[in-house]
Every structure is written in C-alpha cells, then in structure tokens.
Amino acid sequence: MRSIWNGAISFGLVSIPIKLMNATENHSVSFRQIHTEDGGRVRYRKVCELEEREVTSAEIGKGYEDADGSTIPITDEDLAALPIPTAKTIEIVAFVPADGIDPMQMDTAYYLSANGVPAAKPYTLLREALKRSQKVAIARFALRGRERLGMLRVVDDVIAMHGLLWPDEIRTSEGVAPDSQVKVREAELDLADALMDTLGEVDITSLHDDYRKAVEELIAAKAEGKGPAEPAAEADAGGGKVIDLMAALESSVRAAKSGRGGGKGGKVAEVTPLGRGGGRKRAAAKTASKSTPKEVGGKKSTAAAKKSSAKKSPAKKTTAKKRTSA
Image (cartoon, rainbow, N blue to C red; front, side, top):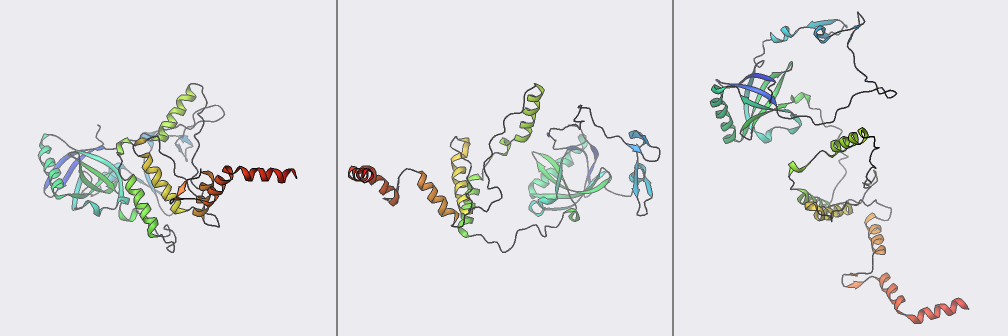
C-alpha cells in the first residue's frame, strides 16, 4: 500500500513517525468523453488566455483572483513557508466519545502506519490507549494545501484516521424537513419497528454494487457486438401517489419475513394507492373477490355463501331455464 504523506502524530510530548495511506478505493466504472458521430476522443486542453496556446503541467501554477479581477500568484514555496504547526504533524487536540462526532462531518478515511522500528512502541501505546479509553482522538493536520480536522480510532489493530469537515462546512437542514403538522399513529410506528427488526441483521460484506456489475456486463456485451439485455420489470413503488401507509408496512413486513435468507418465497412489497373510499377497505374487498371462498373468523363471507349455494341447487337452475324459454 503506497503512502501519500509522511509526518508524525503529536501526542502531548510524544512524537510518532507515521505514514499516511488511503483506506478506501473507488471501484466505479469510468468513461471517456467521445464525439458521438465518429467515436473520437474528446479532451480538455489547458490554454493560456494571453498567448492563446496550450501549456504543459510544468508551466501551470496557482493564483488567487482578487476582487478587482487581478491575479495574485501563489507558489508552492509560499505555502510551504506558512507558519502552520500541522504542516508535517497530525496534532491531537482532544479525546472525546465516539458518539460525540456527527457522522455528517465524516470524510475520507486513511490508515496510519508506524514509520520505522522506533515508531512501533509509541504507535502501539496510542493504539492501546484509544482501545482502553473507548474514545477517539480529534486532531488537526494539513494535506493537499489545506488544514483539516481528523478523527483517529482503532480498526483491526491499526490506527485509522477519518478526515472531518469543519463545522462551518456543514449546511443547515432548515427547510428540508417535511411539514411539522404531519403526524403518525402508534400502530404505524409499531409496524415500522417490526420491519426494522426484520431487516435489522445483515452481513454488510455480502452487499455488492449491482449497478457497477450491470455496467460491466453491458460493456462486455457491446464489446462482443451484442445489444443490451432487456431491462427487468420494475416494481411499482407508488409513482409519487398517496399510499396506504399501513397496508404498505404490513406488506413490507410479510415480504421481509418470507424473503429472509434468500428464500424463493420473498416478494416485493405492494403499495396500495389511497382512493376516496379508503385504500385499505378497497384493497381488502378486491383481494376477497379474487380469492376462493375461505372461512374468515369461523364463518363464510355472504358473497361466497350465496355463490356456493347457487352451484349446489339444481332446482333454481331449472326455474331459470323455464323463465328464459318463456
């Protein structure tokens, strides 16, 4: 695993030489931009506006555009000379409970590795101290031209660091929540709890990126001169219509229970649109009319009883035939 930054962790008066490396990787399928008429590659070229010619990476530097439109050049040497103590140091400033960190602040994850044999002892000391305290360390560090916050925690006997957004980088949620007048009933909450309990346990390592797999299969098919596969029929999720929440929750709980463990009995939960006469009553009546007569609560339904008696009574059939002939 290649390190992307070398420095030290400042832990009080203890300094721990470390190497920083990315803990995550991107598996997304990347595409090139092409000219649709002939398939030619479309590239971005960096052109100097004054000389109207393309420039190389070696000729490109940084500049800050002032309010009056003028540009102030800033070199890498200027930035390296800034009096920032975190330029080469991950400076721990506090130890806090893990639940005190808002997940909204979480950013890129890194692994911290002890850099050299002398660093092994203080590295292990910090790791074991974090384990025993059941806390995380909050630190400041500089990377890629800016100072950032970080959270250090232990993962599989390794100290990992999550970059954190600064508090002022988190947007307010004002105006995002639904109308406060909307209320839910206890029965709806009970069904939601039942659904959460049913779906509560999952081996996260068994989850896969189905979209990426489908894209890779599409690319392989087109490379062989085949057309794209027929799209699978999508389950109707309501299409933005008002739904009968209780019926949807009940169906979801049943589907989740029958589908646990990858059994073939799993079904997609059906969402029942609300009509003027009450969605649940209409859905129940529709289901009853399609099903064969069954005993409900120890008694047959009135419609089922009439239908059954009409089939068993030959006398009524004879009378009906006489009336028709007359």
